[in-house]
Amino acid sequence: MKSKPQPYTAILLAAGEGNRFGDLKQLEKVNGKPLLGRTMDKISEVDWKFDPVLVLGYRAEKIREELDLDGFKVILNQRWKKGMSTSVEAAIRSANPGSRGYFLFLADMPAVPVSAIEKVLERANQGSSIVAPEYSGQRGFPVYLDRKWEDELREEISGDRGARRIIRENREELDLVQAAHEGVLMDVDNHKDLEEIELYLNEEGDKIGL
Image (cartoon, rainbow, N blue to C red; front, side, top):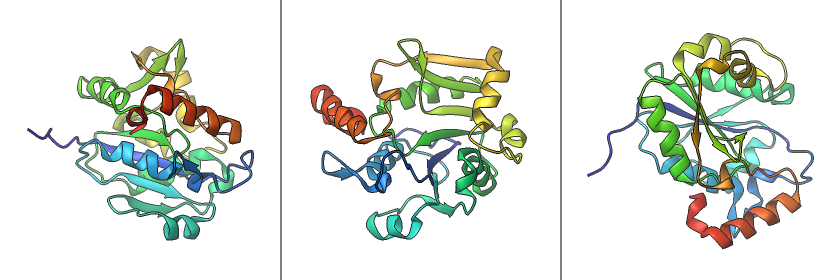
């Protein structure tokens, strides 16, 4: 039996330039598949009631040309150079108003396992207002924020501080769930990171990242 559609909006942040990487990181291949495409596949494993929001910015047209973005509500953040929080704010404004809350995903984390998403989702369904997976004492992704934080997420906050500030200032509401896999922490900043993620997926089983 197919699970009931979840009344949340998944937000995939993919607007940044990734200047430490050197190329268009979103389209870099991970075991033969574009990094962004892998992260989209992971999100699509959950039966969301509302279309996930994909935020593009840097070289957005190139990404549109190269990837099938069906199933995602694609928006363009013209202010992407001002930091990730501008993408979160733009996504919240574009999300379905019926959403109970928002799951924040980063485009450069293709090894986050679906099992971790499901654990975060379970805690959200139980009423937690801020949820994140934790591995080896470190907080990872995706991060869930209840709709009650919407006004703060939509504020004009410069830089990359939006959701981080909410978590930092409301730690008593943060519900950490233990993740079984390191993939919840693994992002791609450079080509070495990419090689390590490919090795990780090969050792753990490629499906862990899907």
